Amino acid sequence: MYAELIDPDLPGYRLASAPAGPLPGIFSNAWQEAAGQAGTFPTFTCDATTAAAAGAGNGQEVSIDAAAYLIRESQPRDGGGVTFILECI
Image (cartoon, rainbow, N blue to C red):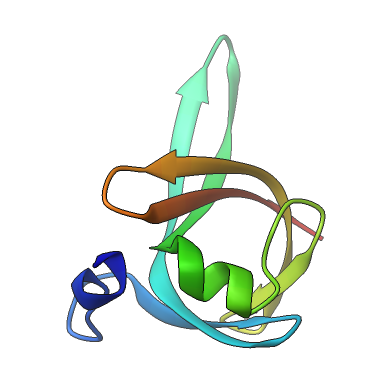
């Protein structure tokens, strides 16, 4: 079901390159400030089943907009989705 919600017309839609193939999802790289520190907080939200088929998971690398990221954490979403917390490498 979550795969049906990831639409190319949505703001932030990107087609990431995962180890085993393309992975459609929503990319966010918001600027945040907290506890005297500031920086971006990149996340990628997608369908969990599609992510598994594309080989995306903790410790794996993905490319989004020609930038390489390491998946640091996976956070399950209601309805079968997953949000990956990313680190730029």
